[in-house]
Image (cartoon, rainbow over all chains, first blue to last red; front, side, top):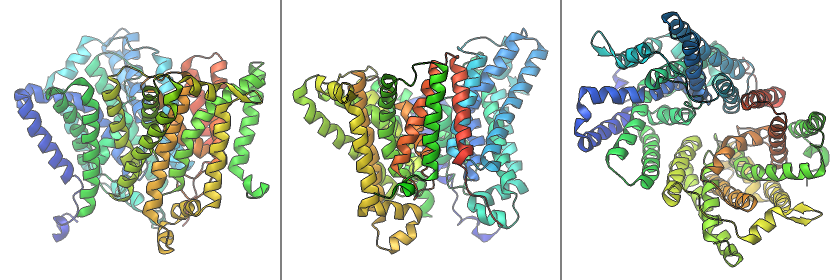
Length: 317
Length: 318
């Protein structure tokens, strides 16, 4: 496919997102002269990272024409679980290792539960993940009823610090992109897109549809867990409600990035761009010094225009 | 009207059975739960959810991934607008009602035009619209709740009108009768089922697909507006994010009521039962005096069990 002459004429779903991203960068740089400085860019990436991670996971689910409305709840659950374990065990190195392991395992289990309900029990995805999301959010409240507790400084210093001269947050982003690149070349990914394109036909041609959908939900759970960990590094404390707003935002980011909710078309690169677009819109509105009461409306209108524009452009080609 | 056995389809039967079981369970767990007064209160809360769910139901019936995530925002907007237009005076009530219903219908229509003319998927369009409406609400309110119900509105909604029942219940029953009759007995209603089950076939048969679908979203806006007004009448004044809690439950009520999210099958009677089931469930969990996290876990798990009973999708066949 890649080397065929049709490569350039094929619809590139994230072109629109890339164009919007560039425009927003220019506007942002014009409003905020320090925008292109390395430190500012890094702190922007750090701020956009949790949503980017959730959006990456959401992409795989959407590619299979499903949706994960529990993603934000998984973020919250992992966030409070990790902080509680690390703080509860006194913040030693072993407690950090255990906390990270339990956090990732919790995300994995949540994803598997979603996948089993949707793919094997054949529950409707929207309703199911809404319901499991309520349960996950309930567990988060059980672990930590109110925002609080702390992780040791070594934890958030490592998150805010560098490795081999490159900021940790950029390493995480690069790792996510590398993961997506590897997955995009796998047999699983082809099966995933086939499932999203036409589930019936995929099934009839021997694609293990249920296992593929389970896999997508598991990846989504894992990436939500990573976002929960990133938020621990960012805020250095736990909050059982921290992920709530990320669910619909991640769906918005995925769609902004050119992935079709009907499945098959799209990819992770677009979703990361979409998450960055949402973050940059926030920045631009902040630095444009709009009156506070106008910010929400302008933000809503820009997002609606970008969503509508993306959908219309993607079809136009 | 369809004959009783046809009306009493399986999902509806399950929902009604769930209502009976939940009432019995509630009475067992906390005596007085199923007392007439308590039931009227529960039905009043269910009526609010039920009227939003009417619009959600219509949009979902229309198919092509029809769903309306903007209902909560439009509801809050309607309540805010109504509260500020009626200045706590009965003289302004009629005028306020007309303006609010017109405005919310228009918001829904814009959503509908985005879905039909620009062919934006409903989930995306209504999500975007939700952001715009919420932003607009912040602009209008500056984050501070304002506006109060006119005395007459509060009386009509919450005070006993007939047989000791509050007016909101009669309004809900009226909504139920009108929506069901429109769906079963008018060309528009038949068109809704036609485009919901097979859009291409409907278009070839001469159904005005776009106009019908756009109207469904407009009606969803209208029902959200009506609910906003009812909520204002019920609680006297409404805080800015009051509608948010109705967004996803309105979808759940429709699904529990037996309307398929794929569109084209189901009806509003089931949705009414679904709304009652949801409210009963939440209310039992509140009376149980278990901590909030336990309530949430039980609520979510119960929804999953309900899915297990009848919300399953067709098996793929080789």
